[in-house]
Amino acid sequence: MPRIVSAFLCAAFVALGLAACAEPQHKHPPQDPPDYKGVPTDMTPPSMIEPPAKPQ
Image (cartoon, rainbow, N blue to C red):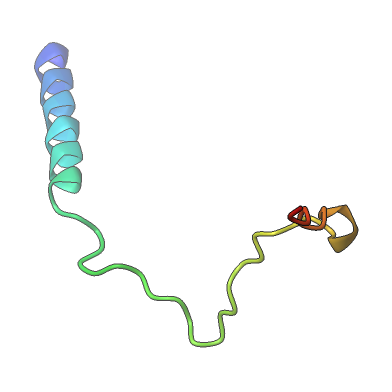
């Protein structure tokens, strides 16, 4: 009897796991809030940036 119950519970968990993965959670891509200014990507201080080489 306990073997049948554990097998049933395992099957139920597998079925729930597959059902959760079957349908995507987001129907459309997420949108940024209107006040979002973006993330700064250049973290190099201006003093470390080398000036461009002058053509000869």
